[in-house]
Length: 116
Image 1: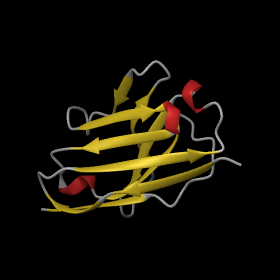
Image 2: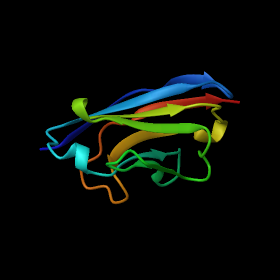
Image 3: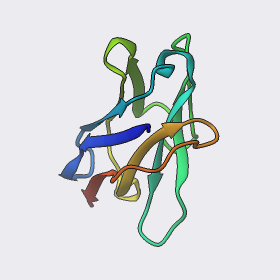
Image 4: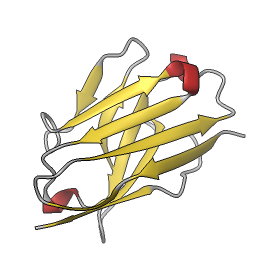
């Protein structure tokens, strides 16, 4: 059974940086799949913020473009997200999953809290 385990995040002030990571266990085809980072802000639905294809090309939502960087380490079944120039509205739980359709049960998420 595929398991998604997010880590990292924290509480910072606006303008600061953070990183979050996700290890995907029992996922033999990780290197072949398009993966994504999603976030769920308080009181809002979960939304896709960044995707990375098997060839390493990336795609970002407009509200994080130029500030966030998604990357992957296929040898370690790990997905990363670097969050720079954080804004208050970036606050939320960050999750990894396949993109654009999440196929697996959600992990516990990584909390990112940005104070203005």
